[in-house]
Image 1: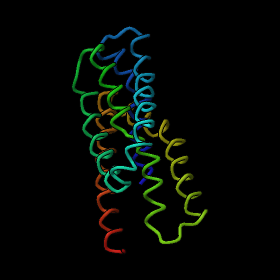
Image 2 (image 1 turned 60 degrees about the vertical axis):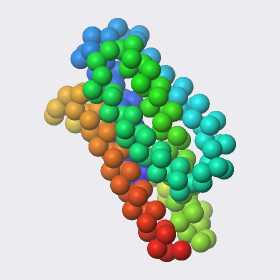
Image 3 (image 1 turned 180 degrees about the horizontal axis):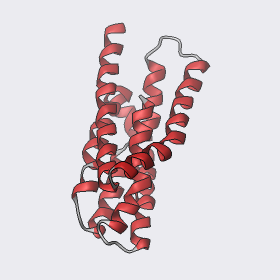
Length: 175
């Protein structure tokens, strides 16, 4: 489940500034600000999620985060104004709701006795996704363009959300 997440996230973070600069004509400093704004939103979300997870639980937060990340990634490739895109990128960072961390928590809850090997495997999966995403997304950009790779990022988030729904159902059946 972590590979679609990292692939989607890095598709957006690596290529959104280039897209904003080349396709939207944004100045380089504003295009680069998009990544910073994503992490600002993510920081705020992590503080919020630390409290909110106690209220709604990991299972519900996971689904909310998957859907909101998928939906909030769409405007990145449909909206054409850099000033609005800066706000939308901040919202995407927040809408992400620390999805990677929540996903890791959920995975450990799927087993009655999670092991250190499970956590190590999950972190390895995230690391492989992070390490391979720049190469893979650059191949996609070479074959298509930066607009398409942003759409691909959304598709990865949607695929992740589908996997999360399936995992939730699997966990419910196993309990």
